[in-house]
Structures are given as structure tokens and as C-alpha cells.
Length: 207
Image (tube, rainbow, N blue to C red):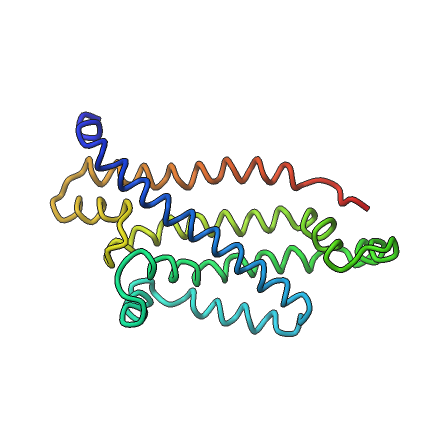
């Protein structure tokens, strides 16, 4: 604990950098996945192909994907966020599409019979009913992002990964331990926030 408080500025700076990477990645990932899912709802036959493509990208080791993109996008946080966004699409699109397509067709038919438009059915019926699957996908994306973002320190993206690698090079156990704890804190904090969001979304559709 003495080491942590003696180097509080170092840990705080790395924590804020890591939090910024995770937050930016999630905002971009969710926005992009939402747009993709809206398109796939209109073209359902393309859904499986799209998910398989993202699955193939997700299977690429993060260091390899960083190495592929560095000549195009360079070192730094931008490349890290791009890679993390690509990884998240598999987790998010798969869960969002599964949740939206598993809604009982009878409910959608009833909503259509009441005069709801396609977007109204998505926003007021499908999303609330699919909320558990959507939130589960976001939780997976947060855990994945938080973990892989540490590896992004190898391309000068900053964050808690820089402390982890520095601690491993010097065999500094307190530095490794507290950097790991802060990574876990980010994931747990997001889990608490999403739990509250899920409770609000899990309501009866406004038919």
C-alpha cells in the first residue's frame, strides 16, 4: 500500500488513460454495432455471413492485428482503439442480433397491428425484450476491451498495460498487483452501471 500511495500520480495517470481507451472504444463499438444490426434486420440473410466475418477477425491474435495495422495507422492510441472496436463487433453484433431476432413474432405482429412503424417496434418492443442479451454482449465487450487494452501498451497506447509491462521487466510485484486491481475495478464498475441500466430496460414493451 505504501508503494501505491507513494506513486499515486503514476497509477492515476495510467488509470485515466486506460479508462479513456475503454470508454472511447465502447462508445464507438456500440454505435457501429447498432448501425450494423439495423442494416442486418433489413437484410437477415446477411446476418450469419457478417457474424462469421467478425468471428474470423476476433480470432486473430491482438499483437498480430496491431502489427498489421501499424504500417497503415501508426503507433499510439488510435490504432489501439481501432483494433478494439473491430474485436468488439463480434461480441456486440452477435448478442444484439440474437436478442432482437428471438422476440416472439406474435408480439411484433400485435405491435404492427397497432400501427407501429418499423423503428417504433425496434425501439419500443424489440430492444426492451432483448435487453438482457444486449447488456450481456456489452459486458463481454467491456471485459475484452479492458484486457486487450493492456496489450496495447506495446504500441505506445498508454494505460495500465504500461505499468504491467514495466512491472514485469523490473519484477516489481506491487506495480503489477495494483495495475491488475485497477483493471479489475474498471470491469467491475462497468458491471455495476450496466446492471442498473439493465433493470431500467427490462420492462414490458409499450404496446
